[in-house]
Image (cartoon, rainbow, N blue to C red):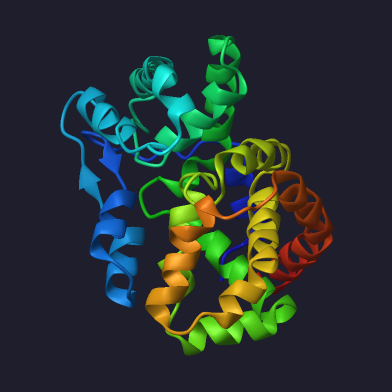
Length: 268
């Protein structure tokens, strides 16, 4: 089992794994592959290497970043600068897909304050680099905690997902590697990111549980793996999900998250 205190120490410090050439986890590749356990596992764990300068990878990913939101297009030069600067200054981490959504969120929160957007982006990278590091240590740790929490507190939904063949790695990487940019409507992402930065992995878990609680009735009505994964990974981003509701619901989940963290610590 994962030692909880060792894992929590990762939240406040970057993972220093060598990443020659830059490594990218392909979220869009996951969408192209479609639903199903094999593609989901490939999306979570398969890796592409961005050879040489990450500028081309950043440019390609920005074409798909919140592509349906007109307000994003004028900010793409700013988003690109932040991503490129971070990759240049942190060659051991480089650029990884998913960071584009995080940078876009920060730029939209601070459209006329690029330095502040860049600072908060770097803070997010510091806290959550384990989502992208070799071996995905924070992702693996978070999946364990989410599974325990969902099974205990959302038992009907958890059972429905598993019986439909929908495993956590079918959907959690999509939401977490983009810090909810591929799950929530953009205004809700901008509300939720403050909680996530304040609370670290606790906030990620609480916001995820809030998301599933809010969407529970729709998900329970869905039948089959394909329909469920489409609702979680695609349709939810255009659903009328209120950001303030997500945050308030997530705050009510935090005590349960803390309890699970303590239980995991004792078990470790």
